[in-house]
Length: 58
Image (cartoon, one colour):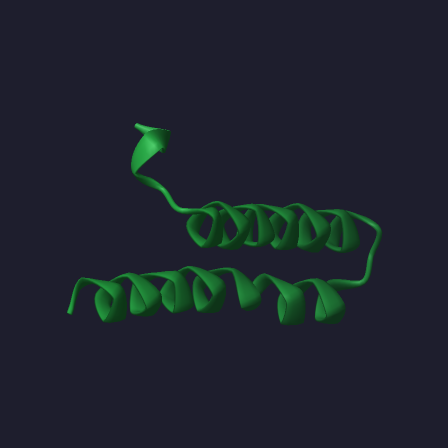
């Protein structure tokens, strides 16, 4: 399954996962506003990856 992913796809996926993990760590440490700010990055990173895939297919 992962053979279909390019290096950029893998890096964006790793960035999204790391952002999610870092957001959860901040949330449980009590920094809820910072955690929310970083948590919003996750769908933005994934949407950017989808955008790159759409451009690549044209």
